[in-house]
Length: 150
Image (cartoon, rainbow, N blue to C red; front, side):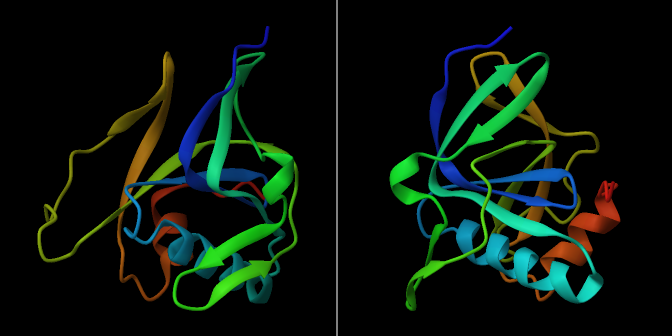
């Protein structure tokens, strides 16, 4: 069963077989954190690819939450203050976690356990809050999740 796609402001990547959907307002650090995760994956021997940056189509398909890239921006990511870069990409991937960049100066030190967030109507993902200035965001995400390598 497939649902209608919702256009979400965010960045979707896949590391191994684990989909990560970065959400937040413009300028919050979504693309920077996602790019840092992509860059950190290769030295660890993990496959990693961009799904979409800025606009992500989210839908449910056969019980899975799928992120899809609008064709016009396939493989393109904006790195703030640097410009648009072309990256290895896939046209769609299953999403497993939502990542929300937070400002360390104002964020709760210990967010709620097992937190989730609504992505679109009846679409919800487990939420990981992550410092927008994290030096190694992939390591933090891996500490909170199980990255599927298969």
